Amino acid sequence: MDGFSAELTAGLRALVSPYGVVSEVLPGTPVPGLDGLFLASAKVNAAPGVARPGEFRGTGRSLAGPGAAELIALAEAAERYAGADFPGTPEVWATPAQLDGVVLDMTALPRCSEREYASGRCPVVPYRPDTPVRWLRGVDMASRESVWVPAVMARHGVRRLAPAERFWNRISTGYAVHSDPAEALLRGLCEVCERDAAALTWLQMLPLPRIEFAPRTPVLGTLLEHGERHFVDTRFYDATTDTGVPTVYCVQIAEHDDACRRSVSCAAGRDLTEAAEKALLEAVPARALFHRADPDTYALVMAGAQFMGRAEQRHAFDFLLGQSPVHRAEDRPGLPRDPVAALARIIGALSERGMQAVAVDRTTRELAAAGLTAVCVVVPALQPLTFHRYGQYRAHPRLYAAPVAMGCPSRPEEELNPWPQPFL
Image (cartoon, rainbow, N blue to C red; front, side, top):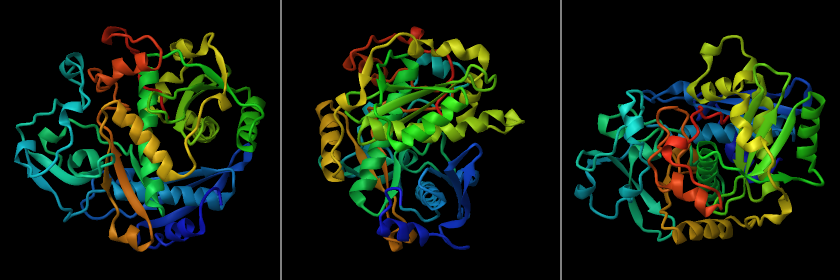
């Protein structure tokens, strides 16, 4: 079912009960006007003391039927659960110098610029190596040695955040759950690379090459034809960076829609076709969110997209929508289908560039009992995607080196994109 093995399906379904990881699953329902696309939602049982319980919900969308949408929602709910901060979690308060063993390369941490810190509205603070923070054990994905990782980077639901721990913007990037541990690691790592590409594209206003898919796959055909019937023009761009993870940046244009003239999504996959399908599956149902009556109900993650969807901001996307070379999707090499081989390729590319990738095991007893593995992957040297306008990590070296590695011009800080992040 939509790529779900019998083992993975059974494991995800086992999580649902009034006292389980997932308390309820809202059945997959068709998207109005597109009966073949189903949406589902799964509510996570938040344990006592878990921070930000309102964010612990998974959503799923699929063209393979309501059951597939429910499984995707369950998988995302399990990822949210894995990022929670449960009482009794082993952790150590220390400075890096006080820890026994290898520590994550903290010199590679993303940094905000002095302008961002001085704005008075920056959500993060500079990292201070002389101040204790909480640490967890992780594993270097290249050397396989144990590595200490700041808890705030591997547990987005961390409770009672200390002032010194506010150097990191907590977000669910890098989390993945699967019955195959290698596949979980691969998906978590690919998501970190995907968010890196999305942040670079917007902040540096990269002139990405446009890509076309001919012939269209059934998924692309169904979703693109739906857009065409509703006068929505969809364009795909190759956002693959020097990490080698196939990534697609998708822009939808609706000149008749005052609430959503422009919207963007971005996704990574084994190849550009898979990435484009994922990006479009995110984009199509998300358009409905732009038409909610009360804009004050939007979360921070949606605020930038809502603002940038307005008609008066449409010119902010001209750096992509102007003339650009068109490439065939099949010309970009994909990743191996085998997750171990795909992992080796990406980790090799990161290692060649001096980038450390660390995985933290987030498998709880409940997930393990269901035959599932949960991980969080951290790659400090890549550019984080953040939705806060005043905390974009504009002093991170990656932001200025990556465009050059991709064959694009690199803008200095004063010429970076001034508009909010529109990523959905």
